[in-house]
Length: 578
Image (tube, rainbow, N blue to C red; front, side):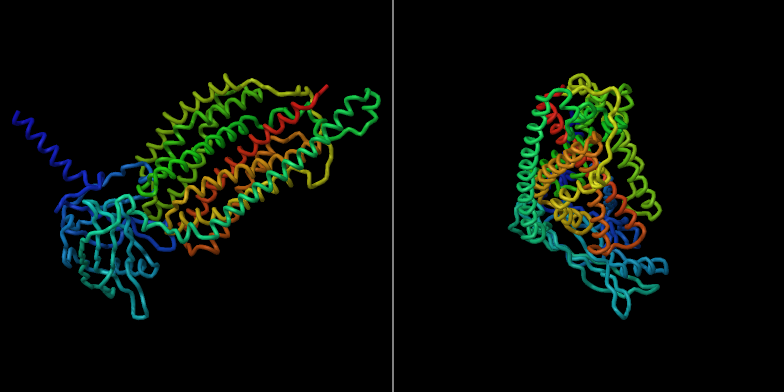
């Protein structure tokens, strides 16, 4: 019994000492850990290095190991290291020297480079981020800030506010002995624990009148576009139906002498399988999954405020993507079966591996560059192994389940018209009716409905802003979906009216072309809205912007194709075909 009692006492004591950062509750004199995270140039937010990659020294307290608690933390390059500073809850710490730096030529060069390139560093106390600047330069030389004053606000045993003040400039020169000091001041704060992240948000930026006006403008454009499309198509289709009904009343001789034209003439080829059906079905399946992931993650972010936890948004996206893999298999497998595809296992593998291959390929390229620069953005091997295991043992089996269900439940072709054995020749038409003209025009209006929101999203990712207005994002996603469907339906109608039955790829690529305009906008944003520089940041920016645009294009293309597919089935099912 005595031995069991000792074990229980040890367990309780250990939980008391280590549970503070997780339940955010502290008792008097309890240790508060100051984690040093990363350091990097202010204008290159995503270019980060370990804090102690600069010749800083640590405090005297024994080290505490930090392990990545989530996959998102590891993928985002979080590098928490214990500062070694002695901070106790509620106990004021007067100014004290915790270590001393002796500058040699190598250390001087490192600090000078950091100061001249406006390096900032990030720390965490109780999951609250703190930013500070390394130093400053003037005509007399470069200076290092050597004193950290931490003002910590407390409310009901929880830390609700942290402010850092950098003081005491020290001129950098070879052989200098630089004392690093710190000071901690505790005070009561009226801020509630659930509101402690509000200070990091920027309502004046995200809820600016321009943001509201852009949403209203996009909403009005949707109403106008839907009304216009409905009016044009309904009136035009009504005339088409009347003309086709008159044609049906003619005898064969009159019909042969008549001037037949329009979308009815391709009824025997319009449901012909798209070229490259395996790739097409894989893209559509992936697009359905991406749309589901974006919808679920945005809804979770609206309810759960994911920005309050390090890496939580990325971790949630990975979990939701893995869990929604059956959506990919179901829609992709069903479409492939309706197109008469036979090698369904290969199609399933292509569908499951399409997006992970794009993401991992881009991440591998950036990771190679990050390793060369010794940046914290380099993904550890264990993390890459974890991602590979998720793909092999979660995503692939779930995609297989979805594919089997899709083939059995929705894999039978239900076309309202028979498909001719011999393809009908596509007649010559005016240049502006060619798919290569229709496709780029199809992305103009969808991009116009989202480009203001793209500015806010880019700014939150590439600058020091926390995106939190997910209600705006949800509304913009709905607007984008409606506009994409309307535009691709109009494009497809013109194409079919020109007796060109290659509507599947045209409708997909017309919606997908939105991504091209987004990427062009990202190029403009890089050169005119940021001050990024250097090969690392340039490669990082354009690689991930290319990946973002590609994924957005797959989603928009899929939404456009699905809406157009319903439209095509509808118009051909309402016309009597002999």
